[in-house]
Length: 468
Image 1: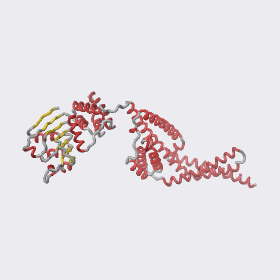
Image 2: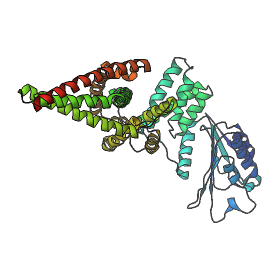
Image 3: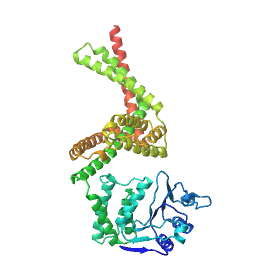
Image 4: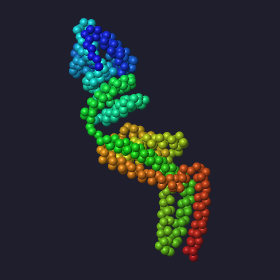
């Protein structure tokens, strides 16, 4: 850190220091009419260095006289300009790269440059001082600042712990990745911005000092966190992800079975219903022989009625199911996965679970019908953020343990259900190729036709015996 005071040549000092900025420039100045200083700011903005300017508009209207500086040029170049009108903003300071501060009596006016007796103090390499001025700049311009206890700040502090370890071990290969993730948290704090700039520039000694200062500033008011908590949150997130993957697999299995059922009913449904009708009619003639015969008749009757309902349901489902080619099937699965992630009841807060269950069922139904347009409609609504994720809201170790155990139990149950489904003959046939299915069809059609003929002959004989 170094501090210098200037009483002459102040304009040249300002132009020089602004020209050295590489990360950011923040200026809060009551009156600004010096075109040379404005040109220096404009040049930095056009060079890609963000420039933010805060001005006063008072009764004298010095900054906005006809023919004066066109501050819109700075905004047109990508900078930001704030104008304070409801009170006198009498500051005169400039913060460069979050670490250097220029302040004093000097207003950025032609008169100050030409005839006034003014002063300015330049302090370089003092991020803590710069932070105080930047905090005032944000207060003036109404920009929020990160607060202790904010989840983003907590994540940033943990990330800084990793960065500190890497610096201590002299292992800098992974630093860029962690710096990007640190920046992505979006924590609004000038000290953090200066820290990121130092890390990107390879100024590791300065970065370490900034890191310690940032951690110290927030650790003073940091809420104690049970070290088990983040580990439990991670376990829950992993279980949620695995459960979703298993349920997606299960839903796909159900869809395969449904398609097989539709195919089976189309090819063999009518023949099967004829056979079951004959079984029922034959059993009717024997129902009075014994209690066992009566039971057989009731079972045959129920099986025939069930097949009738199954054929009707299959016909209705087939009419509502869309035909998709391979590309359409891929699009369908992709839409379903994203929609399911956003509305799965296990992944949303308690207050949304009932609504999420309804939407999830609708999404599943659209998937079963292979309704790409319907799934797209659901996904558009879900992307608007209808439901809040559950895990981030859980901050109790006890609650997290209960949730983890419930998810683990559901995980084991799903594995058992999937294993049972995969062992079923229908599932193997649902995945079989055309040759295997054709063999199955030929064999079963022949068997049903033979049984139909046998039952028809038997029924005719029974009817003849009754007539006699």
